[in-house]
Structure formats: C-alpha cells, structure tokens
Amino acid sequence: MFAITAVTEDSRRKPEGNRLIIAIDGPSGAGKSTLAKRLAKDLGFIYLDTGAMYRALALKVLRQAVDLADDNRLGRVVDETEIDLRHSGGNLQVLLDGENVTEKIRTPEVSQMASKVSALKIVRAHMLLLQRAMGQRGSVVAEGRDIGTVIFPQADVKIYLDASPRCQELNAAGRRVELAETLREIEERDKRDSERDIAPLCKAEDALLVDSSSTDAEQVATLVLNQVKNKAREK
Ligand code: DC
Image (cartoon, rainbow, N blue to C red; front, side, top):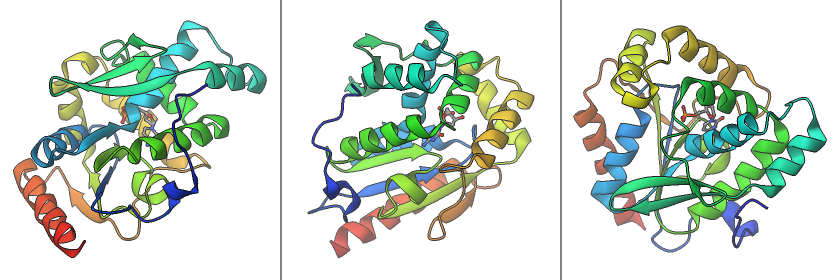
C-alpha cells in the first residue's frame, strides 16, 4: 500500500488553523525546486517535492520492467509501493519501500519514466491521496505540475514559474545529477506533461505567473515571502 495516513475528505477543505500552503507549478527546469527549498527553509515549512514521488515510482517501474499498458500489473505495483519524503539535516530524503533513493531518481531515464507514469490515471489517483495526506502534516511548500490546479486548489499562495527553453537547459545543466538531460528530453517531457488528459501542467487561474528567465530568483523569493506574510496576517 502507498503510505497513506489519515486521508479524509478534510484534505479538500480549506487548510485548518494557521496552516499555510504554497503551491509552485511550472515546467521542468524553471527553478521550482530552488525556490521551493528556499521558501521552506526561510519559513520553516515542509517541502513537498511531488516530482520526487513520481520519480520514485518510476524507478520501481523501471527496476521491475513493468509494462505500462498492463493495468493489472501496474495497479499491483502501485498498491504495494510505499513512498515517503523525510527531512533530515535540512535535506530531503526520498524513500522507496524504505530504501533511500534520493540520488538514484535523478537520472534522465527516471525523468522520462516519471513523466510517462504520471500520465496514468491509477498513478495520479494514488498520488493525489498521498500528497494531500502529506499536506496535512503542517504548513507546506509544494512543487509540481498540478499543485495549484488539483492537489491544493485552496492553496494560500500560488506561483506558476515559467522559463524559456534556453534557460531551462541552463538550469538543468546546473543540476549535477541531471546533467545528461538534454534540451530535447526536457521539451519532450514538458510536452507530455502539458498534453496529458489528467491533471496536465497548466497555470491555475489564480496563480501568479512569474517568468524565471527574466526575473531574478531573489526577487521571486521576496515576492512570495511577502505574499505569505500577508496571508499569515489574514489568518
Ligand atoms: O518535477 P520533476 O521534474 O521532478 O517531475 C518529474 C515528472 O513527474 C514530470 O515530468 C511530470 C511528473 N509530475 C507530475 O506529473 N505532477 C507533479 N505534480 C509533479 C511531477
């Protein structure tokens, strides 16, 4: 079973008490992780890297050579898989069935498979429950493709971080472990993630559009921090 704890209808209601949710969506390599990590650190919020969760499942699918067209097999794998995100010494650890796969999920092969499995209904349905359950652990900064539109439509602050392809390439190259992911691979993934039927990558109507190729990362962080402060005052 996916490690789902205390999943109730509550997860669709407004965050309770003083809990705040920041949703950051956008294509690959726009700088979502850098921004999300920075905000989580400054605010003391939980960092929810939803892409890492799809990547962990993708790693298992690759290891077990699961045929994505085989719904029964995929369903069993999804049911039997435990994915968790742990925070240790300021770093995020991704656990797949208890194994630390933090580094292993950052290969181009896993990137592509994550994009493929994430288009499947059975996978998204499970991830939705799991991610909402994680959102109940406290105030969160969640990054992904469908956070502001599907996972946390009630988020307090929503950012859609966009970037030019060239900038995406530079960002990707800057990440040591994903060094080999080419611009073509990034474009292929973004196309698939944007054109799928379920929860495609798109900007939530009420999300603030930020172009990270023309806006300084520090400026974006300051802008979001100010929005969060205003929201916290309102609560
Ligand atoms: O953010 P990332 O590059 O680690 O995500 C890997 C893949 O996972 C991405 O190509 C699409 C998928 N994904 C998704 O469909 N929905 C999310 N909320 C996060 C990631």
